[in-house]
Length: 486
Image (cartoon, rainbow, N blue to C red):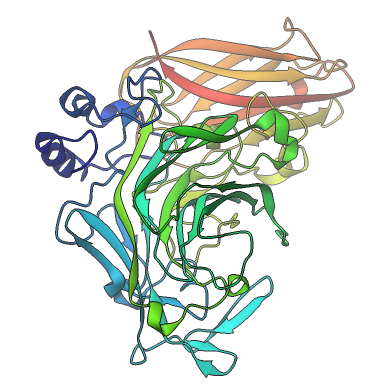
């Protein structure tokens, strides 16, 4: 029996879970009634004091007869793989993704007849071929699924049981230049190391280029009073804008804040969920006799809190790309990739603007990055622009408030900053002369949109060097938001 879930809620979740949502969309657009019908809440917050709302576009109860491919990318489907084929010598195979008896079973097995990729996979000290180990056959297939949707901040929870073999069972999340391993477990390691049969290891990785190992931003290991492969337990992560908490069976086992990690805080962009099994050679190779086995998952649930910002917060806080995740992910996209494609796009600084505007880690209100603009009064009426991708604003007609944070260097003499909405065209002018310098200041204006956003709507930021009274001036902008008027 699924914990805290009635049959009516399962039916409703299955129906509504097919709805698409954007990465930073307001989770109130999902099924608010679920909590009323089924009282589905995080195990660590049974009374839902935090006001969580279930995101059904990512959550899954695994109640059908096969994996829901509208929610999950199955590694190896049609012989296609996203980012990688698995950690050699094992390889992901789609037939190992099984849904039965209300469980997701990610199977690992010994398959001499499987057509392994004739290539090597290299990662750190590991450089091995698929299906081969030290020139001997090692024909192990395993499984992985990845959520199509990404999300920014929330509470992630699974109820699972690790495979009883020298294979990992992992619940992790990946995004732009960042990774969060909520748990990596191993039911039966053959070498004693940092993952044991009664341990869990949690890690955050920093994939900012050049991303040389060790890439971890933090790492935590926890000893349990049980073997992770013996029975089901509930594992969870509460991921806030500036903190992370890890739970096991509703008990807090670890917490860390952005303030504590400083520059190592990397969890500033939307993440996609991964569930998979791998071979970790440094913890020993699985024996043929251990297989087949499976990493069993009862459910995946993701909750978020209501948001009044209609923009993708990470992009308009200058942390990473604008996601167009209704489009398929490029299968070979690397997590640190900063290239524009149909799935993700970045700020542009046209012409000479690139010499005066950039995204930097020098100062920020929240997160790590901000937009920095520098110019001199002698720059001959240069217009400096930061241009967002077409379609990065998509709102209906209505009343809004546009707001952002700005920091002016003490000797700055800027007069005016402009924010332009592209379609329908609207220009907002912000007076910079009267604001305090040397500290972050919040600015806002009301905005009436008489018609909905056109297909190419976006918000562009511009400033004219002729606005400078004298000398060189510097400003930083962060946390741009377009909020529904209250």
